[in-house]
Length: 522
Ligand code: UD2
Ligand code: MN
Image (tube, rainbow, N blue to C red; front, top):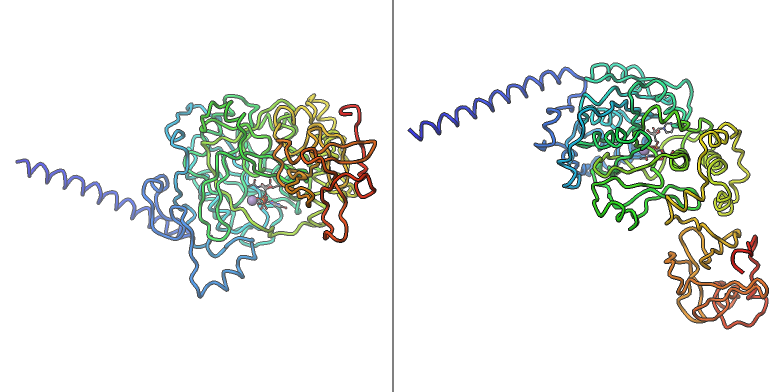
C-alpha cells in the first residue's frame, strides 16, 4: 500500500516534469523563429537554474588558441572582447551578488514606473541587446514603462532598420530614436529624457547587464523622497572575458584635482551614519555617471544636464555637484547591482580632440559650480585655461535661481574627505601648501623618510609626522618639523632629487610660495 502511494507520487512528479519539458520545448520552437537563436531559456527561471553555455552564470569566456588572432582584431572595434560577447546569450544567467540582507527586503507595491534611457554610438549588437534583454527580464513588468534607445548618429547598418525590427517584438515597448548628427552622450540623453514618459528616468550605458532585484530598491528610494537621485552598485563585466564580478559596497564616488571621477573607500562617518548596516544606501559625493535613476520632474527642476557639454565627460561631476549644492541627495543603493563593461580605451572618435572636449566640459562645470576651488583644477592642469568653454550664463543663472549652496559647503558637508584641501595657504604650479602644513598635490604629500636624504611624494596620511612642513615667509624656508632640517633644492651630485639638509639659509633652501594667504596662518 505504502509502496503504491510512493509510485503515485513519482508518477505525478514525472508528469509535471514532462509537461514542463513540453512547455520548454514549445518555448524553444517559438524562439527558434527569432533571428537570435542564442536567446534561449525561460526568463525568470534562469537565476534558479544555471544553464550551460559560454558566459552562463557570469563565468569568463575562454577563446580557443586558433581564434586568438581573430579575437584581437575584433577587440579593436569596440575596445572589448567582441568575440566573447557574441558567444554569450542575451539572457545569460548571472550570479546573485547581493548582500544576504538585501535578498528578502520588501518594497511597496506602488513604486513609480520608470523609463529606461540608453544612449549609444556605434555600440555592438550583442552588448546593446544584452542590456535591453536584462532590463526587460529582470524588471517587474509593472515598473517598466518603456525602453528608449537613443542612437547618437552611429555609422553601423545593423543599428538602423535591423535594430528597429528586432526590438519591435519585445514584451515591453522599446523605441529607437535617432540624433540627426553626432551630439555626444549628454545631448543624446537629454533627447531620450524629453521623449520618455515614465515618472522616473533610469539611464544606463549600452553595455550593461541588470541583475535580479536591481530596480525595486532604486525606485523605493525615489518614492520615499523625489529629490533623491540613486545609482546601483556598478559591477564589473570584464572587457577581456565578459566575466561578471561583483562591485564593492565599500567604495563611493569622489574626484581628484584633475576632476577625474575616482572610487574611494566609504569613510567611517558614512558607515557610522548607517549604524554599520551595509544594506542601507550610501550617500556618495559623486556618481560615475552612466547608471542612475531620477524622478523626471525633479530632473527638470534641477536643470537636467548642461547641453553645452559635448561628446563625453564632465556631466557626471556636474550633475553630482548640482544635486548636492541645490538641495538634493545622491546615493548608491547597495542592494541594487548592475554590471558594466569597463574599457581601458575609448573606441570612438572625439570630434575636435579628446583633450579639448573633456577640458571644455570640465571648465564649464568648474566655472559654474566650484567657486574659487576651480583654481586647484586650473593650477594642476594649466593648459585647461586656454580652452574656450562657451557661454555659461544660463547655467550660472540656474544656480542663482535654485539658490544653490557654495562649493565650500559641499566640501565641508558632503565630501570632507576630499583631496581638495578646504583651507590652504598657497597654490603654486606644482603643489599647494595646505592649512595642515602639508606640501601637497592631489592625494600625495611631500614626505621625508631619511634624515639628510631625498624627499618623496607619498600618499597623504594627514597625521602630520613626516609630512609636516613649516613655512617661514620671511626667511623663505620650508622646515621639516620632525627633523628640523630645511628643504633643499636638488644639486647635481645628488642626482637632482630635492632633499632635506641642515639649514644653511643659502639660496638652495629658499622657496617662494605664491599667493600665500597670510592672515589665516601667520
Ligand atoms: C563613464 C560613464 C558614462 C559617462 C562617462 C562620462 C559609467 C559606467 N559610465 O564612462 O556613462 O557618464 O563616464 O561622460 O558610469 N555615447 C554616445 N555618444 C558619444 C559618446 C558616447 O551616445 O558621443 C554613449 C556610449 O555608446 C555609451 C555611453 O554613451 O553607451 C557612455 O559612454 P562610454 O561607455 O564610452 O563611457 P564610460 O563608461 O567610459
Ligand atoms: Mn560605458
